[in-house]
Amino acid sequence: MQYLTGRVHIVGIGGAGMSGIARILLARGVSVSGSDAKDSRRLQALKPLGATAVIGHDAINLEVSGTLPSTVVISTAVNEENPEVQKAKELGIPVISRAVALAELLEGTTTISVAGTHGKTTTTSMVTVILQNSALDPSFVIGSEMNESGSNAHLGSGEHFVVEADESDGTFLVLPTKIGIVTNVEADHLNYWGTYEAIEQAFVDFMVGTANRDGFVVACGDDRGASQAVQRARKLGAKIITYGLNETNDAILEILPSGTIGSNFRITYQGNVHGPIHLKVPGEHNALNATAAFLVAYELGCTPKQCVAGLESFTGTHRRFEFRGEVSGIRVFDDYAHHPTEIEAVLRAARTVVGGGKVLAAFQAHHYYRTALFSKEFGQALGLADFVVVLEVFAPGETPIPGASGSTMAGNVPLPPGSVIFEPSWLQVPKHLVAHAKPGDIIMTLGAGDIGMMCPEILELLETK
Image (tube, rainbow, N blue to C red; front, top):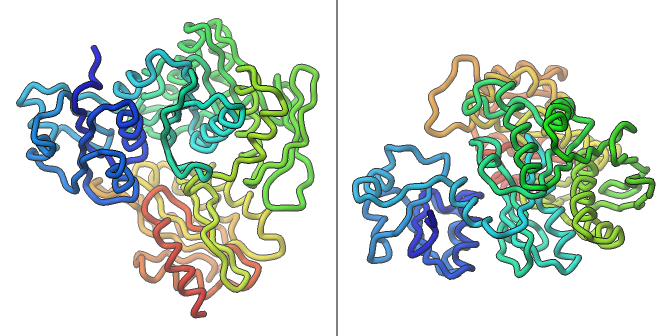
């Protein structure tokens, strides 16, 4: 059934994934309306494109354009009690998930789905930039805005559609993937999957499903979870290209010395050496992400020169080691990292950037279940910084879990007394960071909540220090 015709009403339209769907629909000439709990830059950006969007959820919003919509699309954050969802069901209007809407948008395209517990947004963006630099003009839907375009979605003229394939709600299993990437497989989103075994099985299904469409998958062989899924999927006939630092991989990454912010590396694949590649974003994890993007583009027919040029032109995405400003030799960065593995990768990357200075980090955990599951691991990862401020958990509308708190997490950070602070007051966090920062240091805000909004205040306080 074709749902995305007539007028489509999107509940949660300001979200990363939902705003991307709205952009593609508008570009295809579909009438779009929607609502969100709060205003945002993404929501405001949709209005000049023709979307009718309102703040707050109310049944009357279905008639915001004067008529009833043909379909209502809901995000995973929207529950059955939402008044707009209830009204749509009363009126017999189809209510579909983000996954179903995205799958319909992808019909008839060569779908490149980027999956994995971490690194999806950056890797999706890298693939997109290489294809753009190769004059293929792909369509894309990404979980954050690319620095190059300032947008998280675009309807291109080419056959390729690059999409960030989310595992948090099983979306990646619904998509008609022809080329897949698996950056890593770890325990996360257990509120949906229940067990790690269920997540691993889902990634195996993703790889096999891609093979059943005569496609292939590029997967990180260095990652234990991904490697185990690869072994199982290969036994079921999946075509998979592995990459990583380990010489047992099909494509071998070699990290080279770098004298600048970023990373240098080369890739050996099928007996040929490609590089050196000079990536503007730092960290071994980003070199791995870039290798995955290189392999996909190369297998699609892009020349090695085009692949390298695309990667070297990539400048990053919003909230992924994003530089927010510098005052008196103190640089401020912001990152979406919200899992221990991501925090470890980001802070290790920060070490390559800071030189002889110190790394000061503020972290806001996201969801009580993740905090409860990984409180010790979060503490260990944050211990890679020199000074840490831990905020309270960002979990609006969730029921607290005993012990899943910022205070407990702060107690797990293995740093000397005075180097770790639990600060429940948002207003005090920038003050702590600025008070301890010196020229040559880096301040980092970390988390999937609203902590990124703190950066302007940090920079303002640095100006007056």
